[in-house]
Amino acid sequence: MEDMFNRLPNPLISHILSFLPTKEAASTSVLSKRWRLLFASVTNLDFESDEESPSFVEFVNRVLALGGNDSINRFSLIFTDYPDPDTVTPWILNVLRRGVSELELSVSDYPLPPEIFVSKTLAKLKLGGGDGLSFSTDVKKVSLPKLKTLEIESVVFEEDGVGFAKLLSGCPVLEELVLMNLGWEHWKSCSVSAKTLRKLKFFCEDNDENPKSVSFDTPNLEYLEYSDNIAKKYPRVKFRSLVEAHISLRLTEDQSADAGSSEEDEYLFESDDDDEEKEMVGNATNFFKGICNVQILYLSAKTLEVLAFCCEATPVFNNLIQLTVESDEEIGWDSLPGLLKNCPNLETLVFKGLVHKSTKGCGNMCLCKPLKNPSCLSSSAVKVLKIILSVHIDDDGMEEEQIKHFLEKMPRLEQLVVYFNESYEPSVFELSKKLQSVPTIASPKCNLQVISQKLSLSSTLPCALTKKWSAPPNKEYTWFLKAVT
Image 1 (cartoon, rainbow, N blue to C red):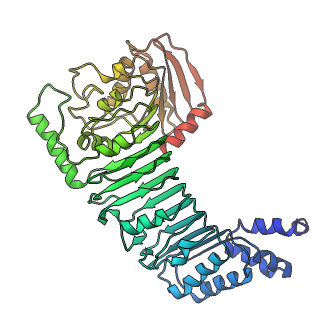
Image 2 (image 1 turned 45 degrees about the horizontal axis):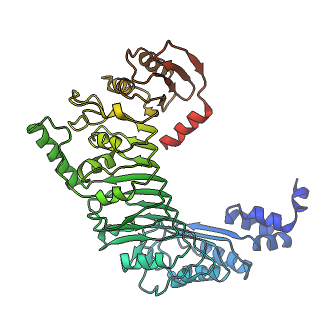
Image 3 (image 1 turned 90 degrees about the vertical axis):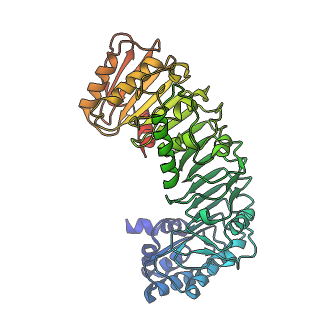
């Protein structure tokens, strides 16, 4: 085997070594002069240490010196300690001179060298994960003509939003952007403006502050993930090409308390008008109007709360064909009736759980309160309903009754699929049997599937039971595994 490996051409061996951790690849250089030369031509270098030890510094220096001026594809440096900039900066300048195309830096308390931001070769740049990595005022110019992917986490922008805008303006072909915990809630404003952007992930850890102003000018964006407290205002939201969006907006603690007080007042002064406007505790109306062209939409439970208490009116989602809703026992479905009414072309509706807070506002969507008005489900265009449940249905049977309610009220339903997120056959058999006995089905013909990891039961409603007992279809269970992650 060793002789066969040695007979491989040098470029192929170097290519193989590039996929090994750099420390392991470097160990091959002691085998012979040939192997030393082979390691010198490795184009992917990854270094990681939790301290600035002399041995680690010497190792990095030796590896970089061994490569001379040969080109580098990827350079990654993860340093959990607080290194001396005089040690780290020469390494970065070395790989920049050698035309590195992928650069990853996770270094604590380190001012990023301005040279990074005028690289003519960088196609992917990942910054952050450390404590105190900073984009300083020393960066006078940004020109990254080949950069297509930019990931930034916990980077301090000394000029706040101005520095961030300067960075984006120097990336003329940027296609993918990941932003995490940049502290923009303290900025005067945050604006994501990039005409070429196709994919955006925008995350902030839960805190108790609302960003002052957030804008999006990304007319060619196709994919969006947005998780943050709602901003005080959204002056500009341009998502003309949006196909898929995962939204996890949330209220601050003070806003949640105000929303709770508003709900209590509704019960104290109850009226017969289920469509009565709630008292707003924030305003995300412009943001939801900006995403109304989306085709596939995921909403967290907290986003449903934002829609209920921070939106003047639910916009019409004419292009929406698939909607996924996450449920939480602490949050009601108040915003769902209005949302479903304004999705005239919705084909697939997915629920991640059915247990939610009982409120007055969700009365015609579920069984929390006696129905006073026709259910919004009766006019729903939904053809496929998918529901993800835990192993054990809640003790009071509300999840089971809610599923029956869907069957009784949704006239265009062609397929109902219930997934159990663990393998437990008794739950599958029990639920399947009970749903087959629903006396009145709104749809003239609906295929029912109850699926777990090892078992799939299917039947056609409302006609006589046609049992099919089998392993779950690969396509369906693969979809389920993707949905729960």
